[in-house]
Length: 65
Image 1 (cartoon, rainbow, N blue to C red):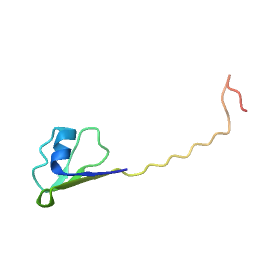
Image 2 (cartoon, rainbow, N blue to C red):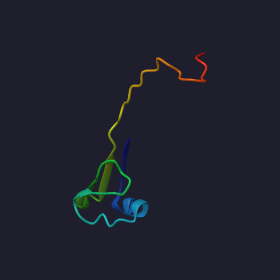
Image 3 (tube, rainbow, N blue to C red):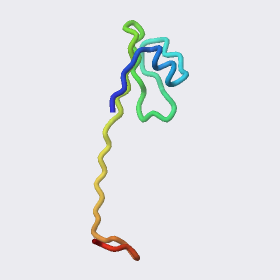
């Protein structure tokens, strides 16, 4: 997932200052938001996480249709 916006938008969304260039730690975010103060822009790039589950047994009391 990628979320980009102006610094004013990021301030509104997070309540954080976004007042200098660099990475900003946002509570509950998986990775920091990169802030570019000179260009009035910040972007959050959340990594994709893929998990594979083996479904060989439905477990007790569950139908395997």
